[in-house]
Length: 395
Ligand SMILES: Cc1ncc(COP(=O)(O)O)c(C=O)c1O
Image 1: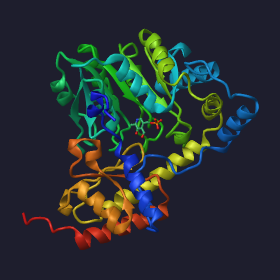
Image 2 (image 1 turned 90 degrees about the vertical axis):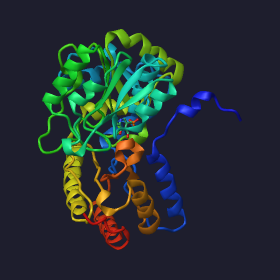
Image 3 (image 1 turned 135 degrees about the vertical axis):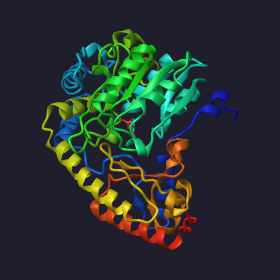
Image 4 (image 1 turned 180 degrees about the horizontal axis):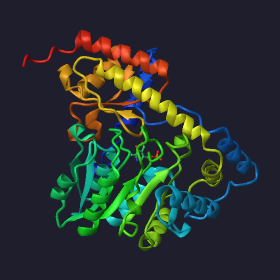
């Protein structure tokens, strides 16, 4: 069948494809360790599941209001005001199907053909994919390991042109685990105001932070609440990826547009799922804290293990649950290493290029897996690199 021309401009999220390939190998009897997909391996906290089950039995099986059930919008507004440190009225909160919904609406609603959107490279691939899909140009902003995977504000400024409409900022970041400092965020805010940019602030990993790192929401800075769309959600913080629930906090000027886009696409997010989400935010938070502490232990295991492999250099991530090691010293590209690790050792990781051109010499490893599996994966990667990787060229 003939596809619409715009389908030539859309990208994808390789994690889902890699996972399918790994599962196909598994179905053939291969023993696979999955380090490709970005989701907590923990179960959704029991009190959240119970709340959703009760809601189902109580009849929360009908359409919800398009923006979300009032109780959840009010709870998100309260939680965001406290954690993100800016005033949020419930009317600015839109409950979406996944955090991904927030980015779809931001780009559909604000970006015209010919506009430029500055996106992190490496970064979550859907920002650039959707930008191209609407006929605009994604402009990659290099995020470098030597700069602790924080964006360089001067480099960012050099990419702004009269066509720049939107800047996407993701901290803590997928795939690097980089976290912006308060100083970084302040300078980005000043730049956005100076150049009159809209900011999509993807804060979906805001509560997965280590070593006392602080989360500073871009929307909390002077002049930013009126130009920032905050993307957050339940997938990562509460191990609720399969519930498909995220939220946007938008400036009052975008309330009408977000409502219209939701009505035109999904009508509303599932009703009983939203009741579960109220419990996630209002109920005990110890499961979240325990999960983050466990991620920290695994992070250290993975970073130490990777740095012991010849030709591999891994920076210490300060947030999220990904490591993004530089593997150039093995003599293989990230794509070759990812492919050979899967087929020859049964360890599934993602090529860094899944996140942009700057990821060529990297792979992404999700450490949302058990310590035992991570230890075994590191053993296999180490053995593979020592045996098979071509020796680096002499200096
Ligand atoms: C940076 C980033 N933003 C947004 C999302 C989407 O989250 P959700 O599963 O809630 O749609 C992800 C998921 O991997 C992500 O890594």
